[in-house]
Image 1: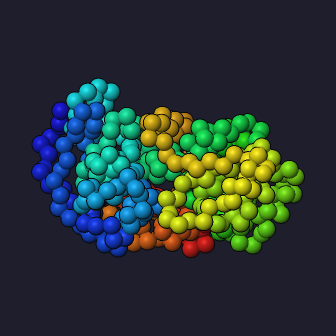
Image 2: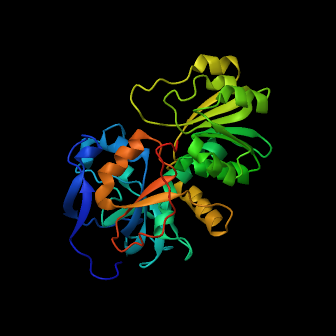
Image 3: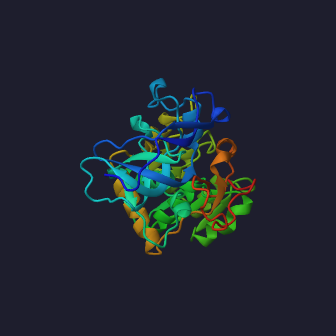
Length: 350
């Protein structure tokens, strides 16, 4: 089922090989047709995530050469324009946030139109803009899966969130506070006020303060759970921060040859070490819960900077370098209100 007649081709930011984000360029590609239990969405805005530049660099094993030309993009928001067979709870014209069908070989969101499985989409309330909603899917789902499903965070537990000012970290702080946890989080000096505004009990300036020393003063036996959104050795000895029997949950970076923490050291302290990522099976459940919480005022989207889709390569390069405050969002729809977002980025933002 479709609404107005659709064009046969679309503008997309795409690449012909896994040569890194710098190789992405504007291309004209066929508009895809939704298959069973899929929707076609006219894209309004997309979030930029570390997974996007890693996809372009060929680091994601679920993206074979057969998927080329590659249209990156996992996050998306927009308006439903066509439905595949078996879609009964969405309609043409619905405003949605969604995760793309890129892992299924159905293309990403950095284009005028994108395919998404209906199970990985949620209707947007009227008060939530396309740009703000584009911050949610990868970052929010990853944080919720890591803390609540994999980490089994409980009320009253102490949690350290490493990388508190990035998109995943900012969602994680709010999810942990909503779960009744007591929260410490790391960020640079420029983002200490941002952490405090979200109710972080122990903000730590990781550049100018001793993280291990601050945690030892705050939780003598160690925290119950560390959520590491950064990895790459940013915590020199995470096991020393966690009480015996606690949990270390790391967001999977997918970086080749990354030096991982010492699993024997975790085992010696009876610490569960978990590698977490956005769960394919629970995407829709997590996304619906996040949108509901934001609509109710119980949670807020992270601060973001809105850029035109033509800046996709530069945006990925900035995310790859780190130190982005909140999220970068790309406006696919040129009519999207450029004045909407709050200031979001800082070179001292991690």
